[in-house]
Image (cartoon, rainbow over all chains, first blue to last red; front, side, top):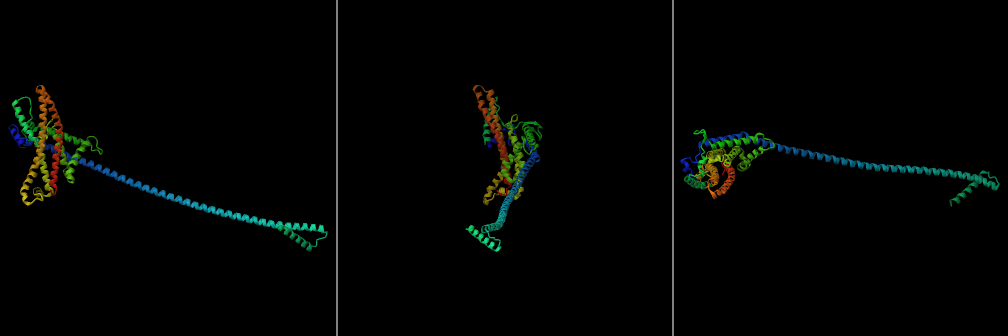
Length: 182
Length: 275
């Protein structure tokens, strides 16, 4: 440093020291600095703050919007799932009810069929019974007539005497039945 | 202390060339006294260096006006550069040193950094080839502004009594030691800070300029005026000049950064409650 000052002061025969600020250098430098300072305080920094704030706001706004639509989407998804679940439940209820109904219908039909069958059977049985009774009566009468007729012819004796004829016929029929029963 | 050795070397070169009276134009401090262009003898005397300063101020203003005139949401072209320029000081100096206190000083520190860089870089720009900051006026002015700002802000933040006490009577020192410490603190804080700010910048810019003049002057001398094999010396001389030109770009940036950074550090120290 001392060398430098020596050098600076030695040269001061023709020039002032380099360490002595000239007033006009300060004035021009100061003027430049004030111009730049004013430009930065009135224009550059406010605009920088403005655009930075705008970006922050837009980015935060965008994030908020994204969050909102995300929430909406998940709510919608939940609603959809709920609807799907209830639809599924309803369908299975309907299926179960249908199943039960089907079983009931089948049961009822079976019962009805059985009843109808029983009725038909009963009717047939009674018809058969009455037919049999009628046929037996008819046969008995026809057989009686035929037997009387035959006996009168064989015996030559009039068996028109009712009491006797009837007794004979009865005995004969009973014998017939007895042999048929065996 | 590069400045020291250059001063010594220059003295010998100067005296040698003075005797020869030959073609080698040795660099001297007259480089930094270019003489008036306009308004000679008035307060507004305008030297070539002052004219360069005004020109660079105009260029700087034009750049920032163009960069921020559109202020698009999505920056394009020069707006990107402008935003990077403001952002650099904000992130690297203001946020780094001052943190949340920084907003108050953003305009001041950003203006200072970019004007310093504009004034430093002219040392290697064609047609100008001299840094505005290689003349003491502007570094001295900015250092005085820094001194005023950090003292005023210190008093504003802590009150005059506490501010002086923080600086002159650091806590945790036994009372008798203050006899030693207080004068040292006074000189280092209130006198040496602006001096070192000024001289660091000035000496770096002066020495850079002298080195460039020396190497390119020597290149020209050896190439044109020397004979035979001596002409070959122009080649290494030129490359040294070229290398120092690149180095000066770094120095121009670094000195602007250091000046601004130290101002921020001083403001931070002054406005803190305790040291």
